[in-house]
Length: 232
Ligand SMILES: O=c1ccn([C@@H]2O[C@H](COP(=O)(O)O)[C@@H](O)[C@H]2O)c(=O)[nH]1
Image (cartoon, rainbow, N blue to C red; front, side, top):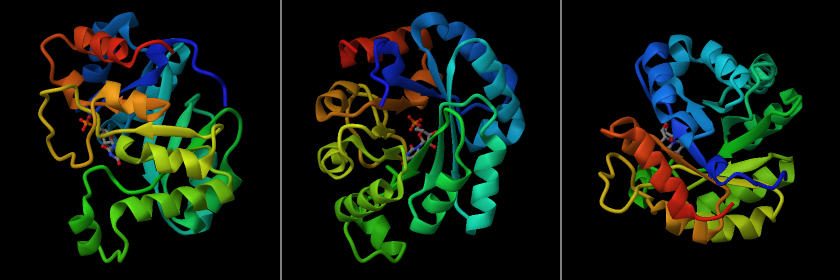
């Protein structure tokens, strides 16, 4: 794993916005307070993949949160197709067949992250979806499978960072959404920690969307989150 030397790289800002114009305006407003941006479904389906290339050309890091999950051939070719966009991270769901296919399709500097259990899920949501295991056990099981398959990092809640680190070792990445500055609205997130708590738990990167995108001063919120996580 490349060590993080710039503390700003720990924060990944989720660009969950309607279109590229809105995303570009937010990135410009945040300026040098953030270095890493995530593009998910909302922007990805509306010009976001080309925008990822634009951000990479500007020297910014990008995370394509596409959460791929399909038959192996489709996942493998899908990962191959996005490998040249200049992104740092791409997500797939943490199903063994899917993860093996993603590893086959991965190339260049792109790191594939496996989404274990969405941070909007608690044990009742997992049971409703048909899983017999509680969330913590499901996350640990999927993290171990991801390690064995050769995935580069794990997406989970910071609440699970300790057991996940034990499962995957020091080299692979832990990337955590479900992050809220103290007092911020949780929205639909259920497994939540603050940026400082997440950092203390041993994560590599936090993902933060609405607390920044919905702020009157997104640059100030981004700066405060980076400061709360401390030195690189
Ligand atoms: O388990 C997961 C996986 C991905 N996400 C994504 O992260 C951001 C979080 O946004 P907030 O506005 O800070 O809640 C969003 O893009 C999700 O798609 C996640 O939340 N949980």
